[in-house]
Image 1 (cartoon, rainbow, N blue to C red):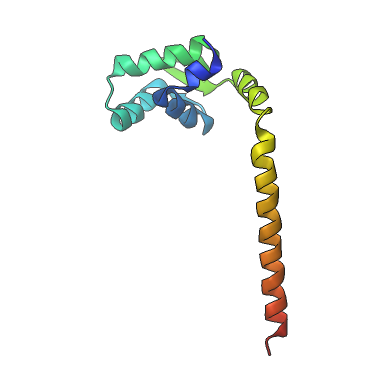
Image 2: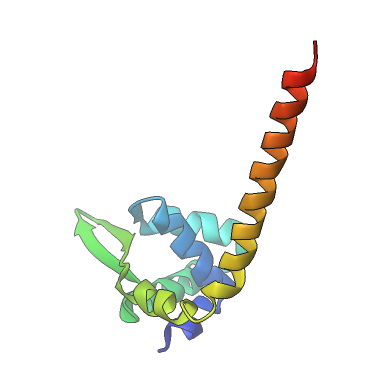
Length: 115
């Protein structure tokens, strides 16, 4: 499955957001996703399986718990693809940085002139 096919689903994106904060047990992930999306536990398990099989997540057993974590390797594919488009927002971010610096300089000059 292509990386964008995996990331195209809002439930899987949310699971990855949760995992980006650190390793989590499957039950905790399930509870959060069930509450936020109203899907069943088997539905959550299916999304976890897709993330695991596509390489976006790893799982390890700790006793009876299954702990999930992000595997960053497939995110490199996404990052590489996005490289083609970074120039569009990098120019705008550079312009924003310039405007912010200009505003700070103008405020500092105004504050220096005040008695």
